[in-house]
Figure (cartoon, rainbow, N blue to C red):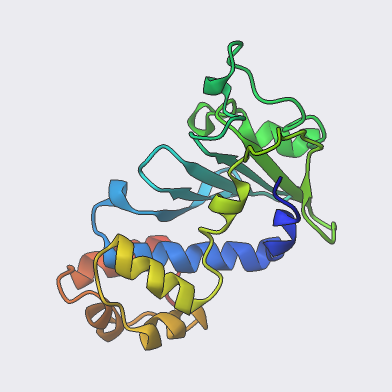
Length: 213
């Protein structure tokens, strides 16, 4: 059973900033939106921002940031806790039981696919840590949280290593580190990271993501 996965998560403000940074780098590396691993949608709904990790193999992690707090829904399609692995096709007991109503309600949009879940984490504004439900995971099984939370790359080194394999590029660690440090993304930085991309199109997308100063 995976232990203390929530302790690996930064506070919501830092997590939001990190997800936007990773989304920006995905925009630079991949101009096909449907192939991107990390994405971020400001104002996905009223006062709600959404970040998503989608590995294209059936696994995903969705984070919703709201005025009430933040909630993470993850789905590992190979997990024994998947509804598709149950005869009743139901969410595994305990995943949503303790989630505050105001945060659980954020998952009700059809686009979120609330029932496709193998784990859930949440943090109300004012909390000092992330929470996870009391879920009994069978011995030898996994809810996918260790794997999917691990896809939130918290250092430029980890992201650059991931990008080299996933996008089949050789990204400049120096430039990736500058973006992780909050530097304004310039045309030169974009061209250095991906000489084959349309720089102007990338800049337009980054504007919509509110990443450029």
